[in-house]
Length: 115
Image (cartoon, rainbow, N blue to C red):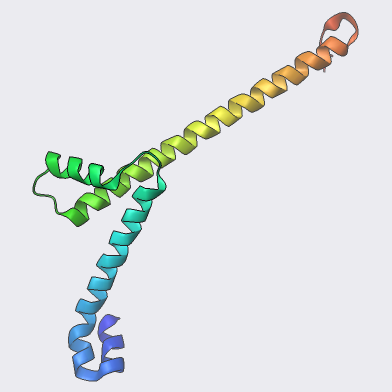
């Protein structure tokens, strides 16, 4: 695709340089998306996480360390969202139970109405 687009836009030079240009743009966009994914999670400092990953694996390049940090951040965000859902469901169940008790208190004899 990059070859065809490059050749249409800039002829032979576009065909030659189209693929490397698209590869660089792709790498840059993936890097920026990974940085944004890490920054969306509260309590994570990108520099600290990248330094920790590079300390654990010295042969890992910065771009790959940022991608690993983004994966960890997305996993943490998913865990936080799941925890919030569980807490919200617990509140709903507690509210339903409280309403049932309140309704039961208003029924004759103080018991909830039988279905």
